[in-house]
Image (tube, rainbow, N blue to C red; front, side, top):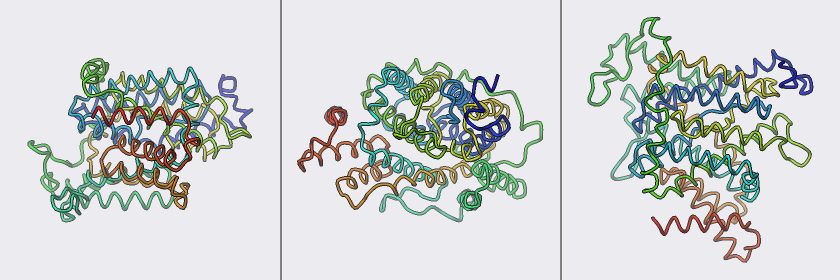
Length: 452
């Protein structure tokens, strides 16, 4: 059956190789099980429900990708997209998280429509490569800033806007240890280094709390719940999966409020970021696995995009931010994964992860913040492919990159990148270089500025 479904022999692989590749992919991206609920809970969402939604949506996306497109690409709620969910929508517009879920759900439906009509591929082809690379880089800086903020390493300052945190604070010291520990693992290319970094930092924190007492790290604001407690009993590490009821289907409650905040730029931002994140990942990983054809195109790309779109809709219904294809899929490809069986194995492992929810609840922000910083580093690689010697390419790319962390908004970075690209082309007599799609996007963004 596996041979018939995944064409293992044709792809010069076997079951053992694919299973090991799936396990490797899971280990490299399993940090999202902890980080996503931690981040979305800032917006008031139930931690356990988001954890369940994260695992189930990752399973749905990865298994759908494997069965529909037969590619070894795994999916899960995307980093950067979840940050935009919290800070770019909920906090920026002062709305409920249900409204942000509604925007994700609508963007997923738009993805499906664009994929069916093959317009999604056409849109991608019309955007200049420099901006595609800049978006990923800018998100990396944005994620890193959030990581430094959550770790307490960077704090607000009325005089200088931001400044260095208090490194005598035990929480900051623990986060610094986690950053160093995880960085060493990454440099040594240890499989699952991000997951090991989270768990290792958490264990160190729990050991210190066990020795010094729970008051050592302090308590959550307004409560007597310690930020980091000692070791729980063995029976407290495994339990039934948390309930989805606090988030399941709640997107339906946000449509009315979504209409009041100017839903077009919000939905556009979700759609724009996910489109480029997904396409960049597909092309990058496929290139590493030598899956591109002679013209540089990815066979069955539309099926892969459809799997991504379906996963986004399912994720919004379950109660999580946009689901997207993960660049960590490259780790499984490196281990020899060549078919959808790798993605299916990864999806099954995400379902199994539901039963360690109590363990995930023990993970403090000091353990996940270093991972955000490391992921930010991972996302910086595209900047090396931007030609900064060509100012026509460099200026829009630079604005897209820096405006994301400086405005604490992924959407604003995209706006500045697209508009500056079109404006520069028009006023330097190179308007014919701009695709009609870019002009349409620019018009929408100008209207957005006028409306706001």
